[in-house]
Length: 348
Image (cartoon, rainbow, N blue to C red; front, side):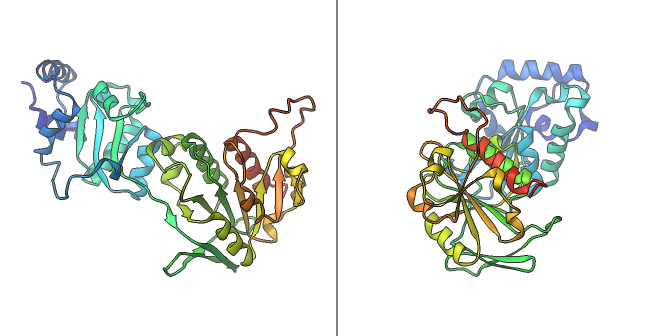
């Protein structure tokens, strides 16, 4: 006997109650033969299910993200920094080989624990939720957006503690633990607008243990589902801050004993009156002062008002003596990873 759609959707996490594989295949064929409506129409049936309770007004489109892929959805569910609305699961999931079901089953278990409504859908229906055929791996989570934390300045560092100054609010007291005696390290991005680059930078920042990441509130890539995917889920694990005026943030932090390093191309570093050093010349900077490393935009680098706030300009030397003058720098996310390694490597 074929299962009713509403009952079938309720069985997603109850593997002990699943009917035989052949019965499910028969259900799929019959269900899709008789239901030609798109995902929007299909989900209306699920809204009547016990799994979905209409307890809040309908969300506007800009109020949520469709997170996709195992590397994003799993940490999002584990960290619980978002509000979760629905989990969409590809129907063929239950037919996968056992070894390829480990992460999806963990996702489904977490969703069940959090009482998140689960909607079964065909692959083409899931594709309609995303743009440009994004690789969702059969899992899409409808969740609230992540928003940066608004701040104004970094305060003075004391013994294992420093303050993050918020506008019109009490400061945040941030404790930090370092295994090698290093002081706090923050990364500031000056108008990085490409979500792919932002995601890759967030991934590197998380990998190296950056204490904080701050963006410009304007002219920066959003903390979107695409950005989270580009970060391989690191966005779900790391707090991101933003400021209304990056130059003011850097000047204020500098007055509180933070040292500002600005990343520049080798050409720009040779044409500046600032203290200019290569990454190879770093001499244990994190043992002396807390540091903010500022990374410029993809096209023009650091703005002049940001350059004026820097104590040092930092560049990466190229070993290629025959390189074209038109390629004087690396992609911003590649350069950031190399610079972070320079600050956090055992050499320093």
